[in-house]
Image (cartoon, rainbow, N blue to C red; front, side):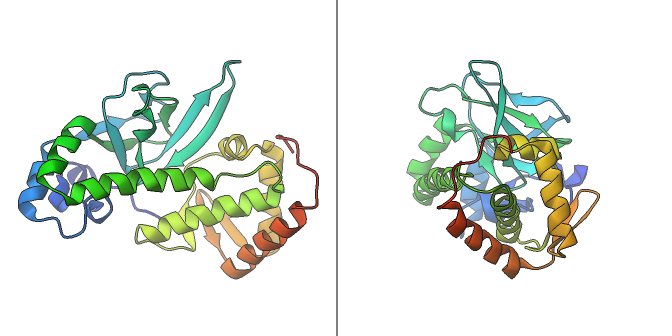
Length: 253
C-alpha cells in the first residue's frame, strides 16, 4: 500500500505518540528521555506545495525529518541551472550537510503539502551527553546520508538502469519504513525525476512506458506497483555489465 498521509490530529502529537517514532528515536529510549528530546523538537512546521522550507545559503539552524508529504532538494549552479540532488519522503532526515559551512548548500522545496520536525543540532549534542545512545544515533544519521550519496546515478549508466535503480531505491525506502516494497507513491513529476537522474523528460516517459508494456511495473495516477522485482533487479545487473563496455551517455538522453 502507499504511504498514508498524516491527519491534522496526528501532526499535533509529540515524539512519544508519533507514527514515525521508531525511525527517529533510538530503540529502547526510556519515556523520560523521550520527553527531554521532545523539548528540542519543533513539530509544528507545515510547508505548502511549491514553497521552500529553507533556501540555498540560508544559515543552518537545525536539521529536519519529514513527517508527511515530500521535498525535492535543489542546488542552483553558478550558471543558474537547477539540479535536483535528492528527494526526501516521510521518515527521512535532511539538512545535516549544512554543518560544515553552517549554510544550507541547496534549497528544500515541498512537492506537496508537507510537514516536518526541526531539531536544534546544538541542543541535540548537549542532550547526547545526558543520553549516550543519542551520540551513536547522530553518527548513524550522518553515515546513512553519506551512504545514500554514494548510490546516486553514475554517468555511464543506461537510462533504463537509472530508472530501475531509482524505483528500487524507492522500494527499499518504503520497505524500511514498514510499508510495501512493491507499491508506493511517486510525489514527484517526470520532469523532476528526469532532472534528478540526468535524463530527458521524454526518456523518463518512454522508459516508464516500456517497463509497463513488459509487465514489470504498473502506474496508476501517482502510485507505482512493481510487478516483478526479481526481473527488475536482474535487468539492473545486466545493464551494469553492459554499461562497462559502452561509452558514457550524455547527461540528457
